[in-house]
Length: 267
Image (cartoon, rainbow, N blue to C red; front, side, top):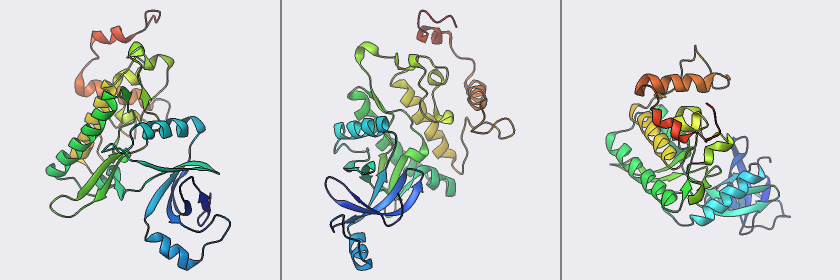
């Protein structure tokens, strides 16, 4: 994908404007047919219709996120799916102003702002959990905001990036970790997920709490972030150092963790 490229969706056509990450672009609505090159005047008109996010990913992640977002259509606190494109396959998502990693790194959040954010995220998690889903991958950069006016800086707060959200069959509850699938970023991942034990909805609450601590302190401080002298995020030993940090703050893991081990697991 390249800047200025037109992409046709089921509902509308979009003009790519800025690449945010490897597979994520901002785009503008475009009303002309796909086979006509937009003029600068048309691009200016399309900007008044608002921005969207164009997100591509491996097929299984796109399919999963599309299905999850359709299930949670119009539910508050969850970024909404607007459209889909076929060439290239991608999702068209609601655009928000910023994410909380960027916001909290630049300026420490005030207590009323943290309370407002926490309430909105807990409401979104309640929707996921009541419908039998584990959200996974909760972290500051997956919490998106729209700016508001005083006294609160934020008008809207939504969870984004639902590609790893998964439906928990009651018969399989707490068995999701048995296949060794790793979820979320190391610093925000629950101990049971870090250890490839069985996990369920409580893993979201751990990640939410860890995220909340990061937002309270702000300025790039994270409670379980290893010392850069010990390991970097790309080092194989990085997860082990996160576990060491978890134990340092909360003590040894309880013996009840053995209950999460499959019976045939000799660990």
